[in-house]
Each structure stands twice: as structure tokens, then as C-alpha cells.
Image 1 (cartoon, helix red, strand yellow):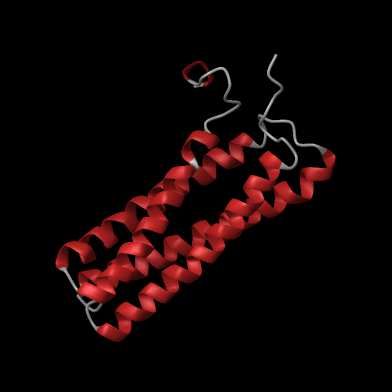
Image 2 (cartoon, helix red, strand yellow):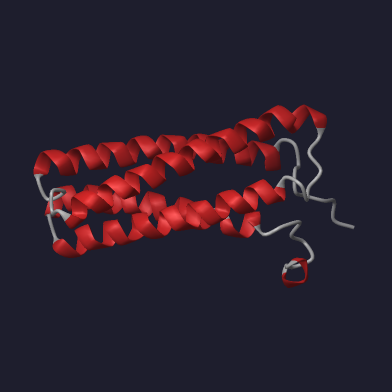
Length: 153
């Protein structure tokens, strides 16, 4: 696997991490649009995006667990790395459960009820807060502590 990576990449995590972020944010945004316009294609798109985001989040979480063993984490960044891993797990579990519930409601067509649609949007928005915290800690590892980076010669 290491042979497939560019020489600047210490592991695959940096190349995967932005996909679930983009998918989740797009899904929440389209969910808001669904509240406004009630179009079937929006409902279907939101469901598809959340399913792909949950799967991508799982793969990205696993790559992050592996990544921590392939980079040098300074002692003063170990607590941040631990928090990042914890928040990543919370985010993964939250969106996995959310997607499972949402899939059930989609299948039963209960998500078309206005009250449930609003609750689902608010729950997705709350999950975006978990995502933001996780991303903030990941950014702190890279940009404050230089984890996963090396000096250019």
C-alpha cells in the first residue's frame, strides 16, 4: 500500500479525510433544501449522501487509526491526537446511528412528515458540530504541531 502513495504522503489518511467531510456537509445542506422545496430528488440525494458519508467515515476512521502509527507525534501533541481520535469515534458512531435511523425512516416514508424532516435536519446539523470539532483537532495536529509533515529539502 505504501508504494501506491505519493512520496509526500506519510499515509492515506490525509487523502481520504476530506471526502466524508464534504459528503456530510453537502448532505446536511441538501437536507435543508429539502425542507424548503420538498422535492423527491432532494430526499433521495440526501439519503444517498448520508449512506456514502457513513461508509467513507468508517474507512477514514480506520485509516486515521493506522495513520497515528506511521507519523511522529510530538509529546506536546499527544493529548490533541488522543482527543482527535476520540472525537472521530464519536462522530463516526453518531453518523452511523443517524444514518441507520434515517434509512429506516426513509424506507417507511416517515421522513416526509414535516416534523420528522425538521428533527432529522437538526440532528444532522448537530452531527456537523461533532464533525467540526473533530476537524478542528485534526487541523491543530497538522498546522500547530506539524504531525504528518516533513521539511522540504
